[in-house]
Length: 153
Image 1 (cartoon, one colour):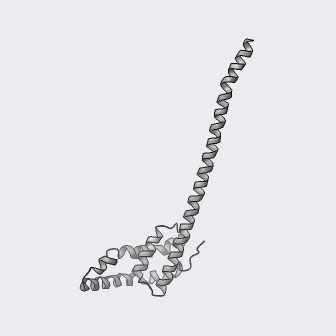
Image 2: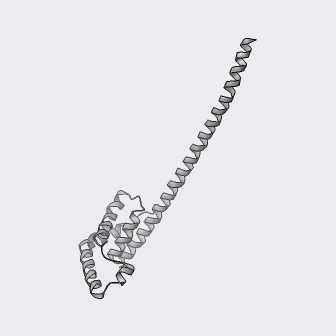
């Protein structure tokens, strides 16, 4: 009888612990599944963002090659988009020149700040911008040609 009492007491202690362990294992599996789904979603959104950024860079590069944009404007836009992109090695090399030109001309006002300038100051800054662009022009045009053909997938 005392052996039966010991076994019954052990079962009363072990069974709830086993049920609790099974519950914790289920919660762990559920948590891992949610983490995997979230990781897949983030990766999918990153890939979609990369594709959108590449497409925008491609469009801007083509507009630059067709002389629809100044090199500085294209550089500013492409440098901004490059921050949202995980570039390949080839893309990184082509994007670098745009980032350098954007940095070299970053001090030149844009939009409302440009409109607020006097004509003489606008003229001076335009000459300065064109001088900076001329230093980078060959590299910018070559990089734009490469970026206009980047794969979107």
